[in-house]
Length: 462
Image 1 (spheres, rainbow, N blue to C red):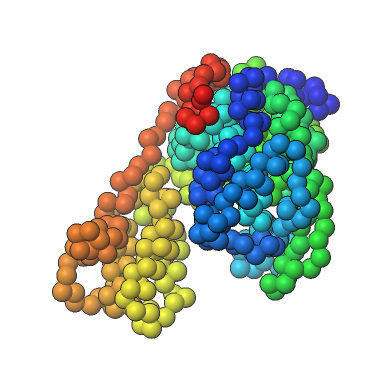
Image 2 (cartoon, one colour):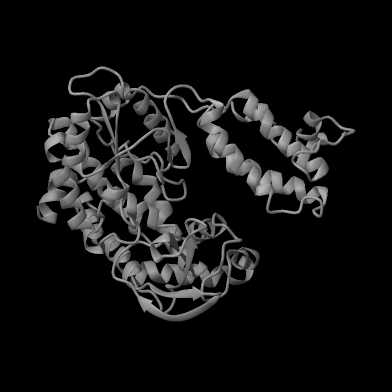
């Protein structure tokens, strides 16, 4: 299937003239300043060596020049040479990384360039809800990725429910998804949605002006250009990726609504892969079925080319399993959090250092899972004891007599405590579990909301 035919079948024209005017007009000083101060000041600098902390600390001195530089891009649609130069850092995905495929490329861009893409990303984020279907929850404003995890969990628990033809769950893996996205395909998707030609031209300029230099042992080695992919580390990249993936999302939904998903899923994946560069990695894609005959499993395996998956499995950093959360399901995640203490010499660190380690690393590792599952109390007590012993004695196994109760230690700093989270309260941030049938019934016939000024920043409404 040709690209134009694929897009025409699934992508509607949703961007209004009001949206386009909002996306392309030249920003004022307030918008540029907001972009600067809403980015992480401690992020690693790009080739120019200036981090966000410099821009924020010296804004009174350089602010006027920065605003003028950003406005120049929006008025002239031109990027100065080397503004979009980047360092490329390879982050290992596992400890045994010994091949290039085992590394994740992260781009360190110049902070000034990220101001431009941050302005564009902030504007685009406001209208993303109008064009991205509810089945995508990542990177979209006012949506939580935890809803997606809850939906997958509910779906897994419905695999054994009786239905005509049986239930099946699919887990697709796209090979190097961010790095293989075709620019031509992305620009055509933007055009199909109805984005203004000026906005599309700016996106194309940002993509093709990028120059990368790989850091080896902290030293850059020459620069080269790239011909596809969106860079991880750029504020605009996740939103552009979601827009491109909307073709696959809407394509699968169209097959589901027409009852043709069993016959046409493979052709859709192949056509989408050829058009977008997003090739399905079938060796890492799985299907999940409940209590089903062996013959049916073999038919599915031969038809899709996927492997049969088993429970539990990890999805977005959280284990997925059947039934209520039990200690056996979450013990591995708890042990992984405790392992962060083993690489530190607890007896050498001061108590202040141990408290900061617990707060910034130990509890942060667990927070994502706490927002999804209600952890068993026995496991929460186990984690709480580990944190308490490490803070007071520097040893996970040795309990030291404390002159202050643990509850008082975990109280807010304003009340004399250390501001730690209490273990028995952490597991109560349970995401609302959604019924799959209700979710599909509400969203399968989703329509974009009427255009209005709702959601636009006050400084733009004049």
